[in-house]
Length: 222
Image (cartoon, rainbow, N blue to C red; front, side, top):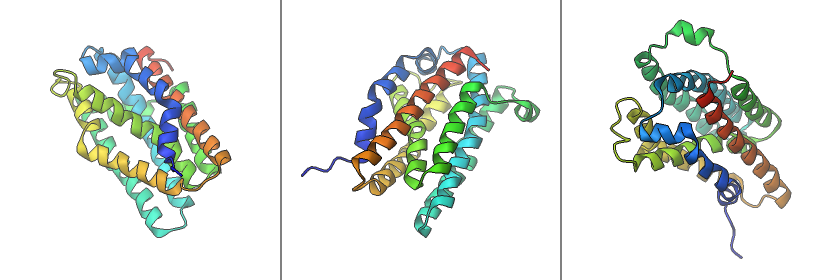
């Protein structure tokens, strides 16, 4: 009997949604280098606020874990987000003239708050597998977008957006994402069909929230 990995089942449930990201004006123009800087500036502020909440979801993985090795993995994910991915944002913020005071006074948009609240709710009420699936859509789809954009002529060298493309198409980011996928598959072995459907629902919801985040950013909605 062929055993299908959980990650494959999850991916197939959202494949069309993820394809739609690449056609969204924000994502498309980012890769082409034609995205208006003021829209990217708004996105960077909202994404910074998003990552603060995203880190809390990883932290709940530490709380939910019963094995030391899992605790270490989730703790490492918190560290990588707060001291790796967010450092890139801080560099961009300086270049875009975003002050610490502006960040301190910034508020999450409705779409942003809804998305992060959903992930935190899933993590609070579920187990470590729920935590992983809740964050996997963001991490994995960003890798997909980064790798797609890396093949667009001059995208990697773009003076403003090249760093974003290089970051999410890098070998380091790919390895981090593959670790999340492998851990999801490991913990998802031998789960029931009912449980698979539960996790698919979470993954689909988060993927739809990802699209809503791109849309919110492009329209600069609050």
